[in-house]
Image (cartoon, rainbow, N blue to C red; front, side, top):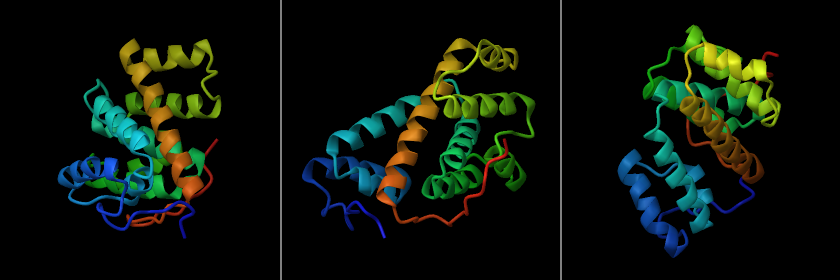
Length: 184
């Protein structure tokens, strides 16, 4: 059971969040519980939607963004985000089951994607204090400075949603995926 209120309907959310939630419903066809929980703070919901929208227009493609989300959710132990991104990775980004599992383990079957995922995990575990070698490895795999910045921003945004959902104990409204220890 969630520790932070999850408004049951858009109309039950704070007034300033309702228009934003209507936009989520229009875009996704439903309003997942993450958005309902965050809607308790219209400012937080607006910030989350703005940042997500801006990053979706960035240089990283949807499969790379989902790979990062899976690795970060697994590392941070967020069952909600792991379940949501497993669903999105398979249905939207068209990643295979094997690729999703590899991403959860901090890798990928694709060498370039593996570098991005490894770097994202390294940023997460080192809390940003990566080495020169870490940056050189992701750059050597073909990522430019803008893409490296976006990887870090995706780590930050996914860590935030992981923390929100862990703190709130958000009810999972996607096919549930069990957490397991990430490979070191």
